[in-house]
Length: 111
Length: 116
Image 1 (cartoon, rainbow over the protein chains, first blue to last red):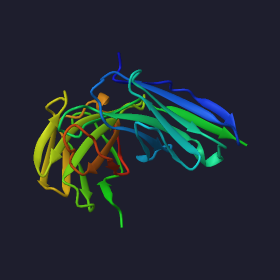
Image 2 (cartoon, each protein chain N blue to C red):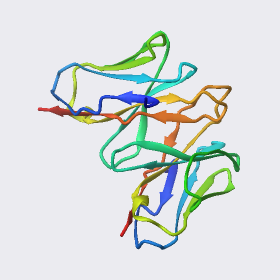
Image 3 (spheres, each protein chain N blue to C red):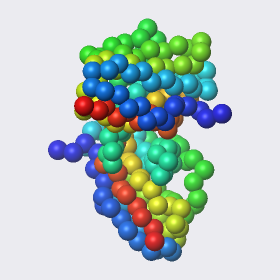
């Protein structure tokens, strides 16, 4: 089983749509969770951290379910500029700061 | 005013050659990383240094040797390049993890290595 699993997609949605991505992780001792965004031929950048109680940043909402070891990202009112690959990231529970990246889910927002 | 920079951006070379990639960060972070992103887009950690000390060394061929002259720089030297080394190599930096938590990592723009 992969340490962090995501559906690679692609997800093709029209502008204005709501889209949700899911991710599962294998190590129940992981403490830190993130969503990163990677544009084509660019470096990954932090989109948002994911907190136990769930958190929102504008049109983006992240949820964490520790019991199911499941993380989600919801994007409302999709914009063309949201087209990118979204990487689910989980820390490896050690004192090294190591992060484990999922394969990423590709989103294509169409006009 | 780049936070994490890498050189070169593109590297095309023949099999068997030796090459180096340089990375510098001006964020004042203590921890730096090298990642490899292959054609399937998986981003995998290779090495990590904390204040010039090696703390992560994943299962990487010993043809790959990182060097950290100071905490702002982490270079990657690759000997005897092979076709399978073709990938994008990203450098990153972060504050050190506290306990078992992870911190946001800031990535450089990547070095696209092509081995012919």
